[in-house]
Image 1 (cartoon, rainbow, N blue to C red):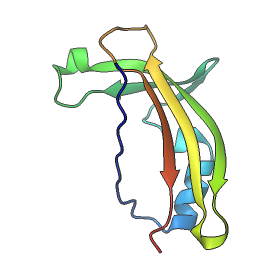
Image 2 (cartoon, helix red, strand yellow; image 1 turned 90 degrees about the horizontal axis):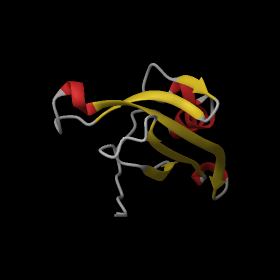
Image 3 (tube, helix red, strand yellow; image 1 turned 120 degrees about the vertical axis):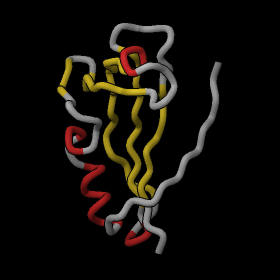
Length: 106
């Protein structure tokens, strides 16, 4: 089953600093500990409050695409495609294909 989800949140950083962070090394913003893997990044992901802790945390392989710019000048947004799946192909863990976009409110 596929669902489209849009989620917005405020990041307490100036847009240029946030853009540098998102465009940089994914190890700086992925859940920790993040380890480079042949297939992407291996990170622990947790489904908060969904299941008991022992069942809710799974290692995932996260693929991170190159950064792209949308727009120009100070109003440009930075976008990175990401995707993840359970490292063990666990059927209880959701698969994600998404775009992270950071843009200023200005």
